[in-house]
Length: 207
Image (tube, rainbow, N blue to C red; front, side, top):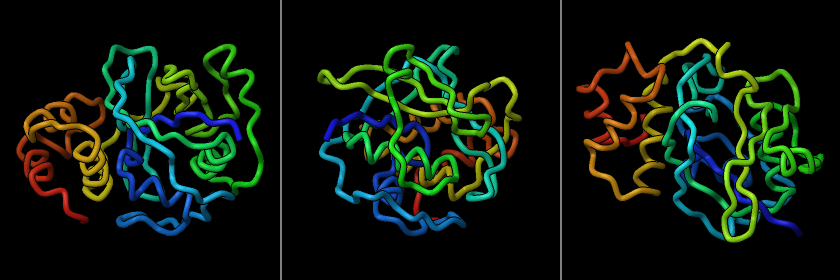
């Protein structure tokens, strides 16, 4: 089966959180239970990957009760991401669950692989982006079709702690660099200041 890299820049930086899209279940701190993918096989590989655009926090997710991460490919970067090597079918099932749909239908990736972007609909995670190529395979992610219309907003402690856990797993960064990265993301304030972020980064245990 054909493979792609799925690039995560938000809570799915955490491997445990991402695996709920494959295995099913409810991640810690989330209110939603995921059905999982048709194929629950583990990713064959994962890599740290820096994307050229900007990650920002926006919207109020019913799953997390606060903002979640989105990606704006037209803004300066970098965005710290983690790429998981999955099958095209698994990617389609992850995308369906991100779009709050049931998994089960494959995605035709021809348009995004040809034109780099493909809008599937008007929802919050309906835009597919081809962001890179890694070892001869496409690196795909999804985000909002129009980053300019989403209200910037602050994430909850549970969401941010999950993201921090993923950054720790993926990148060998000291606490102050993780804090600086998060402080630079649009939407992080005013609920989060440097002191509160440093406190969370130093102890990102489940909240």
